[in-house]
Length: 110
Image (tube, rainbow, N blue to C red; front, side, top):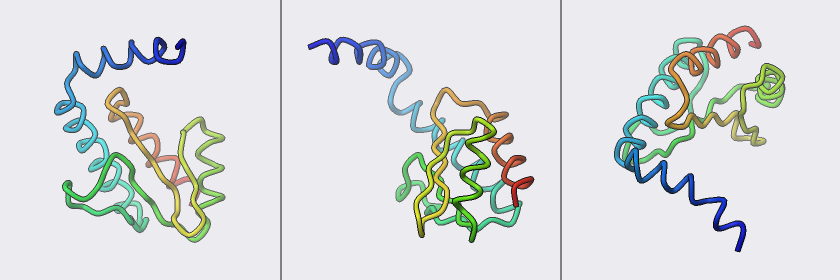
């Protein structure tokens, strides 16, 4: 199956870095996004307790769809869910600077 072979490099990367280190990095980046979004006045709908949230930060804004479209126009990948807000999912390969760019972009789009 060709699809299975295309996944192998990703599995190797995860095995090399380690799931625990990836989770630690994910928590660091999501905490950074949560703190900066709150400082900018956005409502966060993601649990703060690390035991109860994954790698996505849910940011609520009354015009979340417009906000998501503006972020996408700025080449920031995000997810819009009606009634749920904007979802941001940093991964272990994202940088702190990229997370800060999201904050700056959100503040400009308010």
